[in-house]
Image (spheres, rainbow, N blue to C red):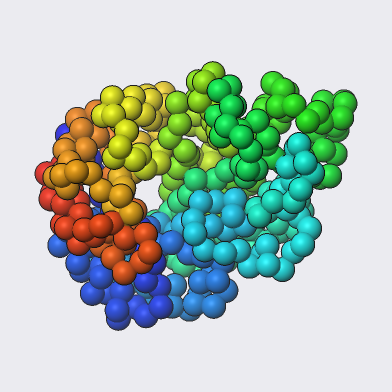
Length: 344
Protein backbone atom coordinates (compact mmCIF):
# COMPACT_ATOMS: atom_id res chain seq x y z
CA UNK A 1 0.00 0.00 0.00
CA UNK A 2 1.41 3.40 -0.98
CA UNK A 3 -1.46 5.88 -0.55
CA UNK A 4 -0.41 8.88 1.52
CA UNK A 5 -3.12 11.32 0.45
CA UNK A 6 -6.91 10.97 0.27
CA UNK A 7 -9.38 13.72 -0.46
CA UNK A 8 -12.47 15.10 -2.14
CA UNK A 9 -13.47 18.19 -4.05
CA UNK A 10 -15.59 20.77 -2.27
CA UNK A 11 -17.88 23.60 -3.41
CA UNK A 12 -18.87 25.13 -0.06
CA UNK A 13 -16.85 28.31 -0.11
CA UNK A 14 -19.29 30.83 1.29
CA UNK A 15 -18.80 30.73 5.05
CA UNK A 16 -15.80 29.23 6.88
CA UNK A 17 -17.81 28.33 10.00
CA UNK A 18 -20.03 26.10 7.83
CA UNK A 19 -17.05 24.73 5.89
CA UNK A 20 -15.41 23.80 9.20
CA UNK A 21 -18.16 21.28 9.98
CA UNK A 22 -17.84 19.83 6.48
CA UNK A 23 -14.06 19.54 6.83
CA UNK A 24 -14.49 17.72 10.13
CA UNK A 25 -16.83 15.29 8.38
CA UNK A 26 -14.21 14.77 5.65
CA UNK A 27 -11.64 13.92 8.31
CA UNK A 28 -14.09 11.45 9.85
CA UNK A 29 -14.27 9.87 6.38
CA UNK A 30 -10.48 9.49 6.38
CA UNK A 31 -9.66 12.41 4.10
CA UNK A 32 -6.44 14.30 4.74
CA UNK A 33 -6.79 16.71 1.82
CA UNK A 34 -9.39 18.83 0.06
CA UNK A 35 -9.62 20.46 -3.36
CA UNK A 36 -11.50 23.77 -3.31
CA UNK A 37 -13.41 24.05 -6.58
CA UNK A 38 -13.17 27.77 -7.42
CA UNK A 39 -15.34 29.09 -10.24
CA UNK A 40 -14.70 32.48 -11.82
CA UNK A 41 -17.71 33.82 -9.92
CA UNK A 42 -16.38 32.46 -6.61
CA UNK A 43 -12.99 34.07 -7.19
CA UNK A 44 -14.62 37.36 -8.16
CA UNK A 45 -17.35 37.48 -5.48
CA UNK A 46 -16.36 35.30 -2.51
CA UNK A 47 -12.60 35.90 -2.49
CA UNK A 48 -12.23 37.08 1.15
CA UNK A 49 -14.00 33.96 2.35
CA UNK A 50 -12.01 31.70 0.02
CA UNK A 51 -8.95 32.85 1.96
CA UNK A 52 -10.65 32.09 5.28
CA UNK A 53 -12.05 28.73 4.13
CA UNK A 54 -8.57 27.62 3.04
CA UNK A 55 -7.14 28.72 6.41
CA UNK A 56 -9.88 26.80 8.23
CA UNK A 57 -9.10 23.60 6.33
CA UNK A 58 -5.40 24.01 7.05
CA UNK A 59 -6.00 24.61 10.76
CA UNK A 60 -7.83 21.27 10.91
CA UNK A 61 -4.86 19.50 9.35
CA UNK A 62 -6.06 19.12 5.77
CA UNK A 63 -3.85 19.74 2.75
CA UNK A 64 -5.48 22.35 0.55
CA UNK A 65 -5.45 22.55 -3.25
CA UNK A 66 -6.99 25.26 -5.40
CA UNK A 67 -8.92 24.16 -8.50
CA UNK A 68 -9.48 26.81 -11.19
CA UNK A 69 -12.77 25.05 -11.87
CA UNK A 70 -14.29 25.67 -15.30
CA UNK A 71 -12.24 28.83 -15.88
CA UNK A 72 -12.75 29.86 -19.49
CA UNK A 73 -14.40 26.45 -19.98
CA UNK A 74 -10.83 25.41 -20.82
CA UNK A 75 -10.76 23.57 -17.51
CA UNK A 76 -13.36 20.96 -16.69
CA UNK A 77 -16.41 21.84 -14.64
CA UNK A 78 -20.04 22.87 -14.73
CA UNK A 79 -19.90 26.58 -13.77
CA UNK A 80 -20.34 29.26 -16.43
CA UNK A 81 -17.42 31.48 -17.37
CA UNK A 82 -17.44 35.20 -16.67
CA UNK A 83 -14.69 35.60 -19.24
CA UNK A 84 -16.90 34.13 -21.96
CA UNK A 85 -19.84 36.26 -20.82
CA UNK A 86 -17.74 39.39 -21.16
CA UNK A 87 -15.82 38.51 -24.32
CA UNK A 88 -17.51 37.83 -27.64
CA UNK A 89 -14.08 37.32 -29.20
CA UNK A 90 -11.14 35.32 -27.81
CA UNK A 91 -13.01 32.05 -28.22
CA UNK A 92 -11.89 28.73 -29.62
CA UNK A 93 -13.02 28.20 -33.21
CA UNK A 94 -14.10 25.05 -35.04
CA UNK A 95 -11.61 23.98 -37.70
CA UNK A 96 -14.31 22.72 -40.08
CA UNK A 97 -17.04 25.34 -39.73
CA UNK A 98 -15.22 28.45 -38.37
CA UNK A 99 -17.88 28.68 -35.66
CA UNK A 100 -16.88 30.22 -32.31
CA UNK A 101 -17.19 27.72 -29.46
CA UNK A 102 -18.13 28.14 -25.82
CA UNK A 103 -14.53 27.94 -24.63
CA UNK A 104 -11.80 30.55 -24.36
CA UNK A 105 -8.79 30.25 -26.62
CA UNK A 106 -5.84 30.17 -24.23
CA UNK A 107 -3.51 31.45 -26.93
CA UNK A 108 -5.23 34.85 -27.02
CA UNK A 109 -3.55 37.63 -25.07
CA UNK A 110 -6.83 38.67 -23.43
CA UNK A 111 -7.44 35.26 -21.87
CA UNK A 112 -3.82 34.76 -20.89
CA UNK A 113 -3.81 38.06 -18.98
CA UNK A 114 -7.10 37.17 -17.34
CA UNK A 115 -5.95 33.72 -16.28
CA UNK A 116 -2.53 34.76 -15.02
CA UNK A 117 -4.14 37.48 -12.91
CA UNK A 118 -6.36 34.81 -11.31
CA UNK A 119 -3.55 32.40 -10.42
CA UNK A 120 -1.25 35.16 -9.18
CA UNK A 121 -4.02 36.53 -6.98
CA UNK A 122 -4.69 33.08 -5.53
CA UNK A 123 -0.99 32.38 -4.98
CA UNK A 124 -0.43 35.75 -3.30
CA UNK A 125 -3.39 35.80 -0.94
CA UNK A 126 -4.54 32.20 -0.35
CA UNK A 127 -1.33 31.38 1.48
CA UNK A 128 -2.82 28.40 3.35
CA UNK A 129 -2.99 26.47 0.08
CA UNK A 130 -0.50 23.68 -0.58
CA UNK A 131 -0.97 23.65 -4.32
CA UNK A 132 -3.00 24.08 -7.47
CA UNK A 133 -5.05 21.51 -9.37
CA UNK A 134 -5.19 21.75 -13.16
CA UNK A 135 -8.64 20.22 -13.67
CA UNK A 136 -9.00 18.41 -17.03
CA UNK A 137 -7.59 21.19 -19.23
CA UNK A 138 -8.69 20.65 -22.82
CA UNK A 139 -9.36 22.05 -26.22
CA UNK A 140 -13.09 22.21 -26.90
CA UNK A 141 -14.66 19.34 -28.83
CA UNK A 142 -16.92 20.70 -31.59
CA UNK A 143 -20.08 18.65 -31.99
CA UNK A 144 -19.62 16.24 -34.85
CA UNK A 145 -20.41 12.73 -35.96
CA UNK A 146 -18.38 9.99 -34.33
CA UNK A 147 -15.59 8.53 -36.40
CA UNK A 148 -13.72 5.25 -35.96
CA UNK A 149 -10.42 7.09 -36.34
CA UNK A 150 -11.41 10.34 -34.69
CA UNK A 151 -13.08 9.29 -31.47
CA UNK A 152 -15.59 12.00 -30.60
CA UNK A 153 -15.58 13.40 -34.15
CA UNK A 154 -13.25 14.60 -36.86
CA UNK A 155 -13.78 18.30 -36.20
CA UNK A 156 -11.38 19.97 -33.78
CA UNK A 157 -10.31 23.29 -32.30
CA UNK A 158 -8.79 25.78 -32.18
CA UNK A 159 -8.34 27.40 -35.58
CA UNK A 160 -9.03 30.98 -34.59
CA UNK A 161 -7.05 33.85 -36.18
CA UNK A 162 -4.58 33.87 -33.26
CA UNK A 163 -3.86 30.13 -33.50
CA UNK A 164 -3.58 30.32 -37.29
CA UNK A 165 -1.07 33.17 -37.06
CA UNK A 166 0.98 31.37 -34.41
CA UNK A 167 1.02 28.17 -36.43
CA UNK A 168 2.13 29.91 -39.62
CA UNK A 169 4.91 31.75 -37.78
CA UNK A 170 6.20 28.45 -36.36
CA UNK A 171 5.74 26.12 -39.35
CA UNK A 172 5.95 28.50 -42.29
CA UNK A 173 2.63 27.67 -43.92
CA UNK A 174 -1.07 28.21 -43.30
CA UNK A 175 -2.66 26.07 -40.61
CA UNK A 176 -4.60 23.31 -42.40
CA UNK A 177 -8.13 22.26 -41.55
CA UNK A 178 -6.99 18.66 -41.24
CA UNK A 179 -5.55 17.44 -37.96
CA UNK A 180 -2.09 16.70 -39.32
CA UNK A 181 0.88 15.62 -37.23
CA UNK A 182 2.20 19.20 -37.27
CA UNK A 183 -1.16 20.53 -36.05
CA UNK A 184 -1.26 17.94 -33.27
CA UNK A 185 2.26 18.90 -32.21
CA UNK A 186 1.33 22.60 -32.24
CA UNK A 187 -1.73 21.92 -30.09
CA UNK A 188 0.21 19.78 -27.60
CA UNK A 189 2.93 22.42 -27.29
CA UNK A 190 0.61 25.39 -26.77
CA UNK A 191 -1.72 23.48 -24.46
CA UNK A 192 1.24 23.18 -22.09
CA UNK A 193 2.78 26.63 -22.66
CA UNK A 194 0.05 28.43 -20.72
CA UNK A 195 0.16 25.94 -17.85
CA UNK A 196 3.92 26.15 -17.68
CA UNK A 197 3.87 29.94 -17.53
CA UNK A 198 1.14 29.87 -14.90
CA UNK A 199 3.22 27.41 -12.87
CA UNK A 200 6.30 29.63 -13.09
CA UNK A 201 4.31 32.68 -11.98
CA UNK A 202 2.83 30.79 -9.03
CA UNK A 203 6.19 29.43 -7.89
CA UNK A 204 7.78 32.86 -8.06
CA UNK A 205 5.25 33.84 -5.38
CA UNK A 206 5.05 30.53 -3.47
CA UNK A 207 8.09 28.37 -4.37
CA UNK A 208 6.87 25.25 -2.55
CA UNK A 209 3.51 25.09 -4.31
CA UNK A 210 2.63 21.62 -5.59
CA UNK A 211 1.07 21.48 -9.07
CA UNK A 212 -1.27 18.59 -9.91
CA UNK A 213 -2.11 18.16 -13.59
CA UNK A 214 -5.16 15.96 -14.21
CA UNK A 215 -5.69 14.76 -17.79
CA UNK A 216 -8.52 12.83 -19.40
CA UNK A 217 -8.17 9.08 -19.00
CA UNK A 218 -8.52 7.86 -22.58
CA UNK A 219 -6.85 4.98 -24.39
CA UNK A 220 -5.02 7.34 -26.75
CA UNK A 221 -4.78 4.74 -29.51
CA UNK A 222 -5.53 4.86 -33.22
CA UNK A 223 -9.15 3.91 -32.65
CA UNK A 224 -9.98 6.03 -29.61
CA UNK A 225 -8.46 9.45 -29.18
CA UNK A 226 -10.32 12.60 -28.21
CA UNK A 227 -7.60 15.01 -29.39
CA UNK A 228 -8.00 17.25 -26.38
CA UNK A 229 -4.45 18.59 -26.55
CA UNK A 230 -3.17 16.70 -23.50
CA UNK A 231 -3.30 13.23 -25.07
CA UNK A 232 0.49 12.87 -25.06
CA UNK A 233 0.89 11.78 -21.44
CA UNK A 234 4.66 11.53 -21.78
CA UNK A 235 4.83 15.21 -22.76
CA UNK A 236 2.56 16.24 -19.88
CA UNK A 237 4.44 14.09 -17.37
CA UNK A 238 7.81 15.67 -18.07
CA UNK A 239 6.43 19.22 -18.09
CA UNK A 240 7.20 21.71 -15.33
CA UNK A 241 3.41 22.20 -15.12
CA UNK A 242 3.16 18.84 -13.39
CA UNK A 243 4.52 17.86 -9.97
CA UNK A 244 1.83 15.19 -9.66
CA UNK A 245 0.54 13.33 -12.72
CA UNK A 246 -3.17 12.69 -12.33
CA UNK A 247 -5.81 10.96 -14.50
CA UNK A 248 -9.54 11.39 -14.32
CA UNK A 249 -12.60 9.52 -13.16
CA UNK A 250 -13.75 6.35 -14.92
CA UNK A 251 -17.34 5.17 -15.33
CA UNK A 252 -18.26 2.17 -13.19
CA UNK A 253 -19.75 0.63 -16.33
CA UNK A 254 -16.27 0.16 -17.79
CA UNK A 255 -14.48 -3.14 -17.25
CA UNK A 256 -12.00 -3.38 -14.39
CA UNK A 257 -9.30 -4.20 -16.95
CA UNK A 258 -9.65 -0.61 -18.17
CA UNK A 259 -9.24 0.68 -14.61
CA UNK A 260 -6.05 -1.36 -14.32
CA UNK A 261 -4.71 -0.20 -17.69
CA UNK A 262 -5.26 3.50 -16.99
CA UNK A 263 -3.80 3.18 -13.49
CA UNK A 264 -0.70 1.35 -14.66
CA UNK A 265 -0.05 3.96 -17.35
CA UNK A 266 -0.55 6.74 -14.78
CA UNK A 267 1.91 5.25 -12.31
CA UNK A 268 4.43 4.48 -15.08
CA UNK A 269 4.44 8.10 -16.34
CA UNK A 270 4.77 9.45 -12.80
CA UNK A 271 7.69 7.16 -11.98
CA UNK A 272 9.41 7.85 -15.29
CA UNK A 273 9.65 11.57 -14.52
CA UNK A 274 9.95 11.46 -10.74
CA UNK A 275 6.45 12.88 -10.22
CA UNK A 276 3.71 11.93 -7.80
CA UNK A 277 0.79 9.80 -9.03
CA UNK A 278 -2.91 10.43 -8.50
CA UNK A 279 -6.08 8.60 -9.51
CA UNK A 280 -9.67 9.79 -9.25
CA UNK A 281 -12.85 8.00 -8.21
CA UNK A 282 -16.43 8.81 -9.12
CA UNK A 283 -18.43 9.76 -6.03
CA UNK A 284 -21.29 11.56 -7.77
CA UNK A 285 -23.92 10.93 -10.46
CA UNK A 286 -23.23 7.25 -11.12
CA UNK A 287 -22.63 4.39 -8.73
CA UNK A 288 -21.67 0.74 -9.14
CA UNK A 289 -24.22 -2.05 -8.72
CA UNK A 290 -22.80 -2.63 -5.26
CA UNK A 291 -21.44 0.47 -3.54
CA UNK A 292 -18.76 -1.61 -1.83
CA UNK A 293 -17.03 -1.75 -5.23
CA UNK A 294 -15.69 1.72 -4.55
CA UNK A 295 -13.75 0.24 -1.64
CA UNK A 296 -12.36 -2.46 -3.93
CA UNK A 297 -11.23 0.17 -6.45
CA UNK A 298 -9.44 2.12 -3.70
CA UNK A 299 -7.54 -1.05 -2.82
CA UNK A 300 -6.82 -1.78 -6.47
CA UNK A 301 -5.29 1.67 -6.98
CA UNK A 302 -3.27 1.35 -3.79
CA UNK A 303 -1.95 -2.08 -4.78
CA UNK A 304 -0.73 -0.62 -8.08
CA UNK A 305 1.34 2.07 -6.39
CA UNK A 306 -0.89 5.16 -6.59
CA UNK A 307 0.12 7.74 -3.99
CA UNK A 308 -2.88 10.10 -3.98
CA UNK A 309 -6.58 9.22 -4.24
CA UNK A 310 -9.23 11.86 -4.79
CA UNK A 311 -12.96 11.65 -5.42
CA UNK A 312 -15.43 14.04 -6.93
CA UNK A 313 -17.19 15.08 -4.74
CA UNK A 314 -18.01 15.72 -1.06
CA UNK A 315 -21.02 13.72 0.17
CA UNK A 316 -21.49 12.06 -3.20
CA UNK A 317 -22.85 15.31 -4.61
CA UNK A 318 -25.86 15.13 -2.28
CA UNK A 319 -28.28 17.99 -2.98
CA UNK A 320 -27.00 18.66 -6.51
CA UNK A 321 -28.43 17.57 -9.85
CA UNK A 322 -25.36 15.35 -10.22
CA UNK A 323 -25.87 13.48 -6.96
CA UNK A 324 -25.29 9.74 -6.95
CA UNK A 325 -28.54 7.76 -6.58
CA UNK A 326 -27.51 6.85 -3.03
CA UNK A 327 -25.16 9.76 -2.44
CA UNK A 328 -24.58 9.47 1.31
CA UNK A 329 -24.17 5.70 1.06
CA UNK A 330 -21.52 6.28 -1.61
CA UNK A 331 -19.84 8.87 0.61
CA UNK A 332 -19.65 6.38 3.49
CA UNK A 333 -18.28 3.68 1.17
CA UNK A 334 -15.59 6.10 0.01
CA UNK A 335 -14.65 6.74 3.63
CA UNK A 336 -14.27 3.01 4.26
CA UNK A 337 -12.19 2.67 1.12
CA UNK A 338 -9.91 5.49 2.22
CA UNK A 339 -9.55 4.02 5.69
CA UNK A 340 -8.42 0.71 4.21
CA UNK A 341 -5.56 2.19 2.15
CA UNK A 342 -4.35 5.40 3.79
CA UNK A 343 -0.85 5.20 5.24
CA UNK A 344 -0.90 6.98 8.60
